[in-house]
Length: 460
Image 1 (tube, rainbow, N blue to C red):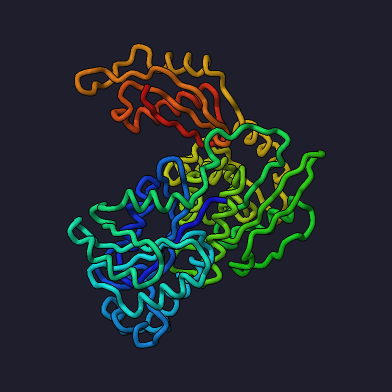
Image 2: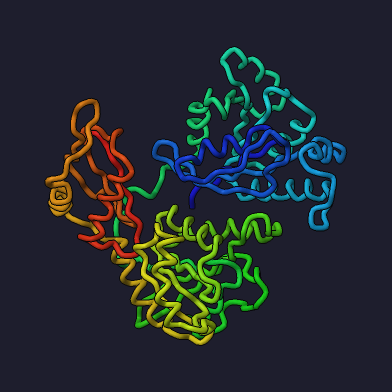
C-alpha cells in the first residue's frame, strides 16, 4: 500500500499551499486563501519526490480542545449565519473530525505551524494529540520566508516533537530539506520495473459514484448475494474482496464505497472515499461504472482521473442500460461523450451492461483477461526502436540552443502498467506534445488496450 501523509495544523498555517506544492505534478490543487477556515474537507493528491511516491491529505484548520479557541478566529473567515442547518461551531467541530480521521489513516503526520504568529496554546494541544497518535511526525514551521527569519522557529522546540523544519511553502525555502526528511520515512516505490506474472489472480476494483450499481454487478458476477444491495447511496462503507471463478480461472473483485462529490459527505462517507482510493491503488484493473441513465458526470470524471493517476487499467461499464429509453441512439453518443469528458481513457474498452438484469456481464471476463495481457505486455527493445525511428523519420524536430532535439534510444523498463525510458540529447526540451505523439504511435503499433503508458525522458 502507498504511504499516506496527512498535513494538519491551525487555520491559515499554509497547509493548502504546501499541499499544492507537493502535488503540483499530479495536477491536483487545493483552494488557498488568507482567510482561516477555507479548507473544511480533506483533499487528496499524489506526490512524488525523486523516486518515491505517496498520497498526501490536506485537512482543514484545526484548533485545540478548549471550546473558546474552536470558534475564535474561525468566525473571521466564516459568516455567523447557519450553513444548511449547522452553526459555525458545528462546522468547526466537523473540520476537526475530518482532520482526526485523516490522521488515523495516515502513516506520517506533518504538523504545520505558523512561524509568523509564533507558538500558541492551541499548537501545544495539537502537538500533544499528534504525538499521542504514535505515528511518525514531522514538525515544520512555515512562513519562514528568508534565512534570517529561521531563528523564529526556535521557540517551537518547546513542543517536544524533536527536530523542527523551518520552511516556506510559498517561496520554497527549506522545502527540499523538508521533502528529503519526509521521504526518508517512505519506502521505495514498487511501481517501476514490476515483472509480469501470469499466475497472479487479477485484482479488479469496481468503482463509481454511490448507487451506480457496484454491489448489484458483483452479486450478478458471483451469482449470489455476497454484498448488501440497497437503493440508499452509501450502503457500502468498506471494500469487500470476493473471489469469483469463471471457466476455471479465478478473479478477485473488490467492491468499494462510492466516491461522492466533495462537500456532500458525512465523516463515514469521507472515510469510505479514502478506502475506495486505497482499493484502486491495490487493484490491477478498475471497472468504472457509469450510470447509463445519467451519463458521465463531474464525479465520474474525478473517479476516472484517480484510476488513470494510479496507473491502473480501465474498463468502462455503462451500467443500468435497461433504463435507457433509446439505447441505439445512446450507444452512438458514447464515444463522443468519452472523448469530451474522460479523453485520457480513450484507450479503455467500453461495454453496456445491466447488473440487475445480468445483460452482457459474461463479456466482462474475457475483457479482463485481455486487459491483464496488455498490462503485462513487454516489447523487445529492437521493435521499440524500429517503431520510434519510423515515427520520426522525415520529421523536422525543434531546436534547443541551436541544436536539433534527437531521440536516441527507447527501452521498456517495467510493466503493470507498461513503462518506458526514452533517451534524448536534450530531455529538458522535450515537450508534452512529443510524449503524446510517441504514446499514440506505440498504441497504434502495440495496442496496450485499457492500460496507461508511462514514458520517461532521460539524458544519455
